[in-house]
Image (cartoon, protein in one colour):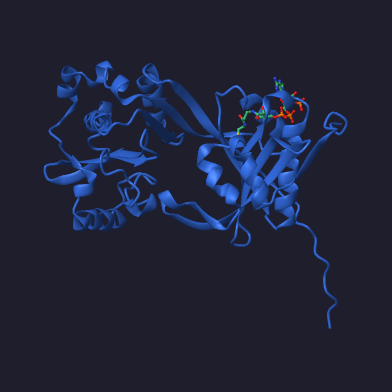
Length: 326
Ligand SMILES: CC(C)(COP(=O)(O)OP(=O)(O)OC[C@H]1O[C@@H](n2cnc3c(N)ncnc32)[C@H](O)[C@@H]1OP(=O)(O)O)[C@@H](O)C(=O)NCCC(=O)NCCS
């Protein structure tokens, strides 16, 4: 179908020496993977799983025109991931994106990966093309995973939500403190208490993410009420400009009607003071209150609001010849 229109284009798995020339064809955060050496996927998130990046390149007359970047887990039986798919503007719409993804699937299957998965951000111009490619290639239907919003912290602070009048009505007298100053025994007691009688929403525990090691000390805050630790807004430094709000939680007994807002304000003010230009607020869709908070408030000052979606596809495991039994 596409063979004819792709005449003159060579698609192949890249060696590490070749892959460097394709750096512009993937996201900055993935460029280090083009070394194509076994590595750790998310060292900054405390994710210790080891992976190997696989790069499939498209070349016209030896020049890079497309890249499918994926990774396979080095532990057997784990799913592989497609990380990015890119075709240069002049070559789009002729089947090259689909062909690159197909070659990546084939390569991962040959290496023994049982399944391929992908997560991407919707709301961008190429979202529809990407989803069209996945549907054609027999991937599962996309499912919303998270909603994210991007904004400048000083813009967000101008929301009426953060006005002194509003805050005075919301703040029950929190003692807000830098998370980095939380005594370890207080964190241990929180964890033990939650194990005995769970009250923290799953996935929002401060230790659920990187053991708490990856939080940005300048902008992560906790709150006590009557001496008891009741909430936290924990952030991650992506780089000197970009900050991600990763986990925020307030004890349900205190969290009605926006009670967490004073914690957000404290974190935002610290983000401005620390020189962050952009914040990324991300919440899994299984927290509908947070999604509503983005829709109702954050979207008013955000420069981008979109959901991440995920999909996957089982791979045909390459059949190995069965040795004769003795
Ligand atoms: C997404 C992307 C890789 C697609 O590459 P491509 O070579 O155009 O892909 P294909 O030609 O195989 O398929 C694109 C599909 O979208 C459709 N499409 C519609 N309008 C299109 C357009 N203006 N440009 C490209 N595709 C278009 C194509 O017709 C095709 O569907 P079809 O197979 O039913 O005809 C490319 O647009 C791109 O690099 N975009 C920027 C990077 C990006 O956002 N990547 C995805 C997230 S990592």
